[in-house]
Image (cartoon, one colour):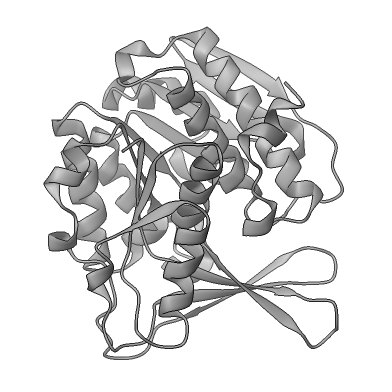
Length: 309
């Protein structure tokens, strides 16, 4: 398998053609990244737990329709799917409402992460959203540790949301720092840099935790990379909306896809040329997603990205 994603699934509700109508989209960083990779021709799998309620089969079908393997679909239970509801306001801003049925043990468990899956993949991708609740936290950390054990490319997307940690930035940072020893490639956004100690401290952070690469996404301004003692930027592309749901995930899915397309299978194979190519690829992917204000239907294919290379 090219890419193994782990995490909780989310539901995006985006405005439809009528003011009161809504369209369901299976979303969330892990699912979006997996789908972005699949649309780029990679073999992608998503390890998640869903319910046999109204949304569970819909979520699994959405993944499959977009070329993603739903790992261990037998993990379906009779409980309600863990999800966040994401509503786009008329100006394109995102409004989050987190929901979990009380007493429903719908979170991914440590036993759900199979060592054989990690051993047979190339890139292990996880995100900080899953660290907010046990036992999904243990499942996420297990996947990261196994990725390091088998010398895989371990990718981690810091995705801070006030609703997850009740506006406690320190709590989020504490969880993320516990994962850093197992991470090769770290993705953060401008709003999360301060949480990690500020941009000036990132090189020291990389040295202390032996992180190979940090990519900072800058929205419409492009992206910045810290690698090999150097800092370099990829300029952004102007688009209609700078805060589209899924745009950052489209960037990261495109970035990881480019690494795999270029034949990277281990951290020691990363070079500045390979990373610049991947950043440009991801930047185009995010830009194409932003143009349509995000969501799974806007995650581009390899053919669409190739037109702008």
